[in-house]
Length: 238
Ligand SMILES: NC(=O)c1ccc[n+]([C@@H]2O[C@H](COP(=O)([O-])OP(=O)(O)OC[C@H]3O[C@@H](n4cnc5c(N)ncnc54)[C@H](OP(=O)(O)O)[C@@H]3O)[C@@H](O)[C@H]2O)c1
Image (cartoon, rainbow, N blue to C red):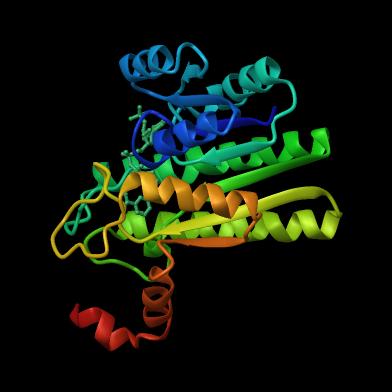
């Protein structure tokens, strides 16, 4: 039986993917801050799901919390880091920016590094990060979020390069959703919104195929291309 840990599995994409993995006979552990949701999910899964309360911004606890899950599961085949927050913050209020940076940058990088090291010790593993299409360009409504997602995307790519250079059997996948129908998808002008179950199905397929990068859904590849080539003066007018 394959084993997975999902960081940020209490709602949205992480939760849907955890359920998908469970349906496919994986042993799954999820984390998140909302203890009542963790308990509810555990009961709903007939106690199959392992749950652990963990706040990724509590950096000093991160290694020991994750280690406890590795010890419970034994060898871990897959870790998905889905935890994240996003706030519309065109005024660049520092309290909001700082919260996003602590969660999406510091919290996530600490987990990436710990898991990468564990996979080296195990001799194999698959690390999946959920960045975003927002990684591609700066966004005036959520500067810290778009920058944090660029950080994640580049970090994942760097780890893939390290694994290749070290010749270790570690796969790294960067999932780049456009808009997925979860509480996080906020603001006006949202389009091509993907149902969360469909997103989980596509991520699962991407994991099975050990893809380097997966757009959710595939048609967002076109937007990714447009965003990459868009001149700055056009972006500034949007
Ligand atoms: N929805 C979209 O349109 C979209 C688009 C592109 C990328 N993404 C990315 O997809 C990922 C999942 O988002 P989602 O849409 O599924 O949103 P969501 O339903 O809000 O899920 C976010 C998850 O992150 C966890 N989390 C947040 N802060 C945390 C913290 N400090 N410590 C531990 N866990 C924390 C939450 O759990 P607790 O609250 O229980 O801690 C929750 O399980 C995020 O990284 C997001 O940036 C989403």
